[in-house]
Image (tube, rainbow, N blue to C red; front, side, top):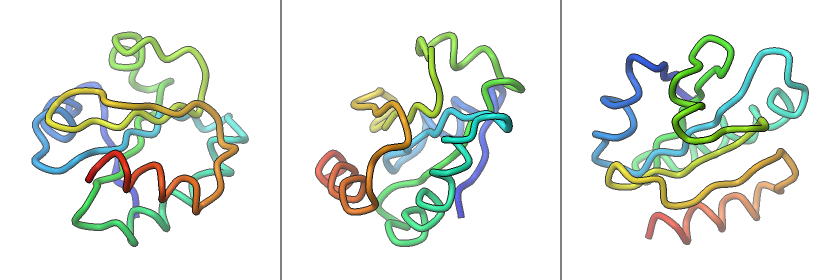
Length: 107
């Protein structure tokens, strides 16, 4: 299951994480965000120990999305070693495409 982060916990949970972290920037009212949530939950379980997957609600936490220039949601940014190394915008990726992308970026 995906975890949750906030503006207050972002540095500790994401930037200081020993493992790569995929941050899903989302909002309650966003249909595509809700549509991709089950896929991210599955990947969180399947890739446990390789990558941590967390969600950040952009309505409740405006500082971090502004800092990373998030303009549309869902946006997913992969962090490794405290740095944003790659990202995806939108909910169109299949499970196999998302798994392949993550595994290629965290290796």
